[in-house]
Length: 293
Image (tube, rainbow, N blue to C red; front, side, top):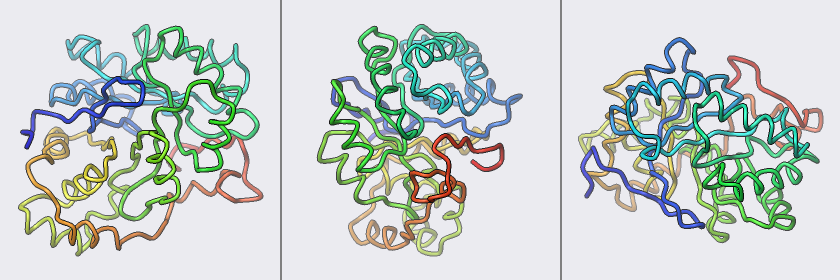
């Protein structure tokens, strides 16, 4: 088994390798982001996940610079803002500004943040151009269900390499997961700890006690054993280290099933504001407000 300073790498469909455990920066206060990113890198995180929608790309770039780690040793992900989708030139210009804020000439993974209605096909053409020009080493999507993925693939020249979806013991999205696995699209879990709502689960607590691990470590291990990439977040270094120290134990089939039984297919509370979630009164270009994420 790997020790806590090592990390498993996942090979994407185009052959590049991506760390299986990354660090998310969503909702970290702006005045702390640079230091927190530096702390994460110091604690052996090499995958950093941000987005224009988070408003902290510049701080992430500063944290990377302050870490002293060479850019080539990191795997940096960002996402295309909904408001920049649909127009080829507008998207590319906006992405170039994202690169400037991040302080780099490329990202390792570029994702469409949401499947904006009537825009994501044109947006994907821009991502293909960005990929072909070497400004992104891999491209993919977030929050795409089976219908979105199939429609995209019917029009794409380059297949998406990653689909980052909400996934944790409370929300499994089995149809999307199966489709991605069948089509060699790597799954990545955002909110892998379920916004902390699972940390007091008696089921997870019992399993954690038996392994001498924390509930968070058990949840992350459950996701890793299913082949997911995970991007937990913490501003505390002790928690950062804890979230990476998950390769020295394994859950058995009964434990995996017990955790799976916690499924409620329950999205985050803001998810239903989008029309593609099934809400007929939702908006296609809805941007969640601060505090809704």
